[in-house]
Image 1 (cartoon, rainbow, N blue to C red):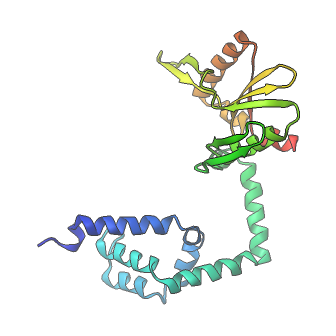
Image 2: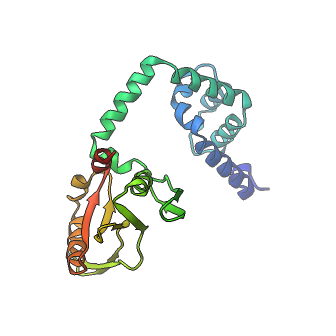
Image 3: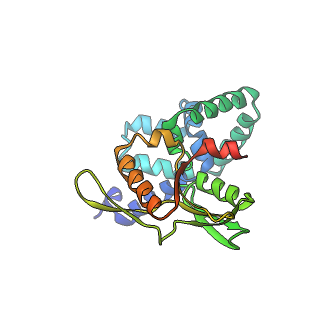
Amino acid sequence: MIKLGQDPKWRDKVRQSILQLTKNPTWIKRNKEIGRENSNSSKWRQKIRDAKAPRNTPAFKEAMVKRALNQKWLRHVTESNKRIAKDPEWQRKNKLVRERNLRNPECLSRMGRGKKGRIWSKKKEQYIFYASQLERDWILELDRDPAVSSFDMQPQDHIITYASKDGKRHNYLPDVLVHCKDGRKELWEIKPDPLYFRLHPTNVVKWRAAKKWCQDQAITFRVVGYKLLNERK
């Protein structure tokens, strides 16, 4: 007889339920707050404390699944989020945190990650795919810039080959090829904070090879980020 915790079907069901729960924005924002509020009154937490079950046991996973399927709990989380979002003190603290993160290069490097999608371009007359929020903002900026006639994201005919410090050969593909109305071409690498990323040893070698390759092709190589984008707006 197979135990519940050893049943592959049951474990797959638990895993899928937990993954759905962790992708819920409401659950992500209010998980810590709700956990503190319900630490003394929640039945599922009391059950886990009584059983003294660690987090990697089937009992804990079963309790998490039950909580995720609890509609009353989901309504409570939604109402709590709305109440907190209207709090002036919370809005002030949230604004301060965002301003502090915008000044931190390490936080900038993590901003926008995983925000992939596509956006319609009037100049290209087609959908353009982007890999981050910053790339999406630059697509909008290039689309409304009168000095830009066209642009290509991830230009496959502009692959740059360079050698790393260990002697291995690598291929490097910049983010954007910009065609200006005066005939100039610019090859852009989009990074949240160019000054911070220039310190990385791999980027030093990679971007040095890109500048040399662009000089031979009569193209300007640039590394652009949030600062230049805010100046253009």
